[in-house]
Length: 182
Image (cartoon, rainbow, N blue to C red; front, side, top):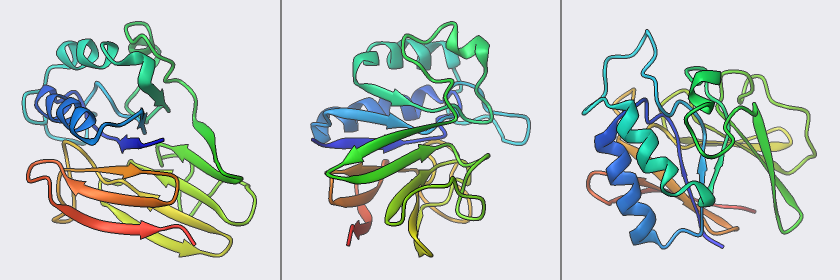
């Protein structure tokens, strides 16, 4: 099964359209969204083609494929218009006996992880910078940001096939990073 992982759309219709194109191109079976879907937040500039209503319409069109967690810019009012659950602080997915914990990153992250089994993977968004770190007992992975990248990073998304994560620049399609689970 192939997953496409993304976060931090922040209401950008432009990057949501790009995301839908990549879902089709990648032939992704499921989509894992790590929060901050519709609202840009008071600390962020407006992203390109800010249009939360258009974003929710596009995401609702693929609702049956989405697993989603809540970001710090997501709220109950967003859940009222989305056709998939998005209010959980984290989700736990099993990949062949290895747990993948998905969360936005504002509550749990590399410096404040959940309590989980050794060898687990913690996948987050929130910080808008793609990275992977092998830490004591777990691997921390950040997908970056679709619409508002920071620290000179790119507009990013990831794929995961159960053994390997790939980071891509959504604008160029260029593969930027790779991490194979050990």
